[in-house]
Length: 186
Image (cartoon, rainbow, N blue to C red):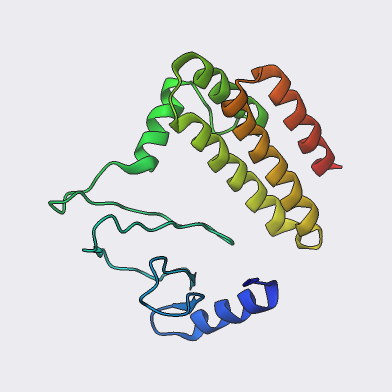
């Protein structure tokens, strides 16, 4: 089992900082012949990863921000820009009348009610995105509480997943999320 700890992640980020490309990867797969190529990629601000394509059939990439955030731009098979989730999220913000100044609970409530009504699968994804963003800002300002904050974040994301899986009541889910967020603010 491979465990990426803070010390290893800090070292990888430091290597990326001094790299000309402003990024550094760490392979965790044992060979390039493995079906699943797993790696961590520390990418510093002002780094650019040029568009690329994998020609292996059904090859997919999963990108997860462990620290920070990134912007992903996708292209179709002809090299044309695709709208991607960023534009889709903007459209959803307008459709569900979400204001950037609203608190996280009000945004989540609107999105979860929207999901109950429309069954748009991008709405729960947007909820998770907003939770990730909310906790990123909290962790950034409270590094001494990182374990506590990440546990709360995971609880909330699980609650959103349970909402979808078990068709839970929106108000019940929001109330349990509100209790956890209030614990964070204390």
